[in-house]
Image (tube, helix red, strand yellow):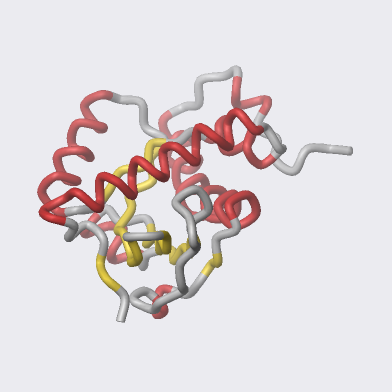
Length: 168
């Protein structure tokens, strides 16, 4: 059985700058939403459905997720890659998310500063990690799950809970 995802060539080579940008866009716009859907049960929805209520789970450990990829304008102007719906006890709503593959401390500092000022929450994730999750690696699935929970917690604490936009 061949793996669902295969980035083994890239896992051991440093990509060139233009490849880095193409790879980041692929991870942010295609791979992350697919892994979120296939491995975390997220519903993939159209951008026009952001604000809609998709329900909530009965426990914190298995939230209801939905993902809507941002428009190109939102991505360019506000650095939003998508909107994550979360439904769990005590938290139900939408979070603006900046998915990043960057490991550059200068870039990450800018992103986390933007998170504090504008409420666009950073999810740092690599193609390798997504590849491992996509191929059934429980350790990496737990790692991504913890990052999602931390993102949700940060959004819930940002400016008195305003990082999670309530649903109607």
